[in-house]
Image (cartoon, rainbow, N blue to C red; front, side):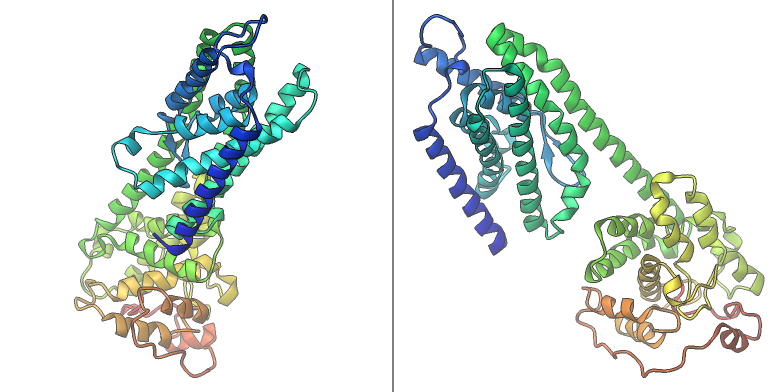
Length: 460
């Protein structure tokens, strides 16, 4: 556990305890929480306790149905009974329901460390009590319209604060950006906010008809939980399909087995150094896996050939980026990955393929993937080079071709990743003129195509 995370957990625990103590001393439990809401006389302490126990039980049931979202946060339907309890009993009830009702079986089994238990409960208690204080401070709640709007507002504060705090803790624990889980799970926040009207109706049914009427809301709440589960399952199915497809391409050639996964990891590490956005990181993730999908259309006689390729065979091999983009184009979900797939073999000086883009004309993510792809290819065995280069030799090649084949800034970023951090960096070569397309073509025999008799050492 990092020092910053430890400080955050300590602070959240202190704040949650302070808020609950203040709630107990300054905000008596609202009589509406009583299990028997009789218009005659004050509720007995036993009825109040049973009412509190009822809402804690509902919260426990809701928290037992948690779903882990793509961003890493846990979402469950316990928010609805907590908001209803907040509306009926005030800050003290909200705090106790959040503290006790969010206990999960994995905590009881010891699967969550003690500091994780403290953090999880604090992240619910603090927003719940803050929302309850705000709700109690709103006047005129005897009018149904005012009470409903006030409850919706308090629920929005509760949901939002919990979402922000959960994302912050997840960021501290995993090292990812604060915005990453927020963006990934923003849809869950919006759907959770839709439970606020349901929570208010639960409280009204509790007052009007009794505790048994609240149980009728189990169906819509469970349906909401199923919707979250289906969303996660569909996304996981999509993810596994993409990974399986990438593995199928790699396994056509025993020399490239696992190539796409390694390229993906290297590219994402470079992206982190270059501080690319969350959406771009996701594009690098998928683009790294699928960058060679076009090799599906390359005949085995070319793809698996262990001798040098002829000019015609090299032309066929060089068509795989454009073919890969054509294969992926119908999948709208993968639209951001198309430029990466199509242009990951463009050269910085315009001598690459398929479109001979130059420098900044090449999409930045494609330039990142090009470096990752080249490094992985150079440090692995290939039919045309059974003895791979050492990491040090591969870094020398990246530096040597910086400004010709690779973006020098991307190579600079690669040097700062774990893949090259301990390697002796030769540094950028001396400033030299970048050959034009015509000059490069002349060096290659006037054809303008890459040399067909010798694979480039930095080619996958």
